[in-house]
Amino acid sequence: MSIPSKSYDVVVVGGGIAGVAAAIQAARCGLKTALVEKTVLWGGLATTGLVNIYLPLCDGYGTQVSYGLCQELIQHCNDFGPGGVSPCWKKEHGASHDAKRYRTDFSPASYILSLDQMITEAGVEPWLDTVVTGARLSQGKISALTVENESGTVLLKAKRFVDGSGSAVLARRLGMKIHTTKNYRSIWVYETNKGKMLMHYGPIGVSPKASDLYSDDVLKAAGYATRESLGQDTVEGISGKIVTDYIMGTRRCVREFYRECYEKKGESRSEHFPVKLPAMNQLRMIAAIDAPTMMKDGGEWTPAKDSVGMVADWRKSGYVWEVPYSSLYAKDGPSNLLFAGRCMGAIGDAWDVMRVIPCAAVTGQAAGLAAAVSLKHRVQPKALAYSTLEKELRKLAIPLHFEELGLKCPF
Ligand SMILES: Cc1cc2nc3c(=O)[nH]c(=O)nc-3n(C[C@H](O)[C@H](O)[C@H](O)COP(=O)(O)OP(=O)(O)OC[C@H]3O[C@@H](n4cnc5c(N)ncnc54)[C@H](O)[C@@H]3O)c2cc1C
Image (cartoon, rainbow, N blue to C red; front, top):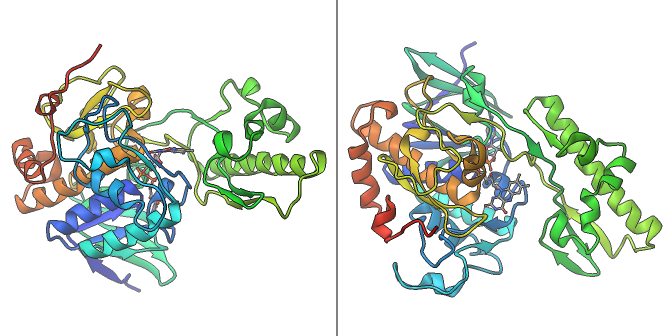
């Protein structure tokens, strides 16, 4: 029996922030674009994973460094909910700002509604509840992806593909080289306590005693390896078993926490209870592709001759990076495949800089644009002349180099 198929110009794998940005950009370039997401929600870790902080677009000293869809996506994340960026960031380009960083908290549910709207308005064809299971190769290129949903198996054919899966699923399925690293445990719970809904995660907002969730005593009592015994309470890899153990272990810690609240502290179950748990694994750094240019430790303030935009280190002020186009495709592998988001080519501390929401948006938009421009110029993404891509990035008014914003290393 032949497998039913559909044809597109671009197919994007994964509806996280990187995939959404890639698909919106490709569709805005007039390409027939499919966005395939295995859950029923857009946003990936940012929404399904309950992460609710859009980290900064600025350098920490008052200068915005990330533009384009990264800015659109932050401006829309509170359309259906409370909060928003500090009003000082709504001033004109280049205006001076106060000390507040260009970031915001958001409600994941609200953000999903905004993403529905942005995807629809861009003309992206959505495939929800659909998992990408493999890729078909022909003459060094991907010709189609196999996807599964309730209708069965479908072939999605396209000329360009973007992997925004967060875990480099296409690279792994195709046996391409990847880089992995260790992850530490996250315990993320939205709960209500005495009528107050807390939109925060484990160690900060769940309750004054939430740090208990992380303590070795709680882990030990729950029968799990402790940070002490494991060094950092880390896991590496993404096998079904590793992910299952990681999630079950995390939730057991949460159970122990609530049990203690009720049994030892006498709290009321009707007043203090969990409302929502993450619906995807909270591994931070799963797989990075092996790119011609790997973003590496100490690379801040290093000019990239093929920069697609800039990002700031979310952890500290004054560290700005130019993001190379040559980090968005693999050294070896299909010539029509781009990567975006946290599976791009970055390792070590640079990976920690690049794995967050604004960077996913910057790299997603660049990958979507590169897919469109390479198609228009009839070259494969790997062979796309940077000057051609640069011209299109400039049309989108995206600053590419430090000096364009008058930025210098402050140290
Ligand atoms: C605990 C934790 C806290 C964090 N805190 C913050 C924070 O405060 N602020 C911040 O900016 N960042 C934070 N991050 C990082 C950030 O949220 C993510 O790294 C970022 O959102 C990644 O975006 P992405 O689009 O690259 O990947 P993902 O968000 O992982 O999106 C990938 C999408 O692809 C889908 N997918 C995967 N495989 C397939 C397949 N085979 N078929 C179809 N679909 C598939 C997934 O379902 C998912 O929707 C945090 C991360 C973690 C784990």
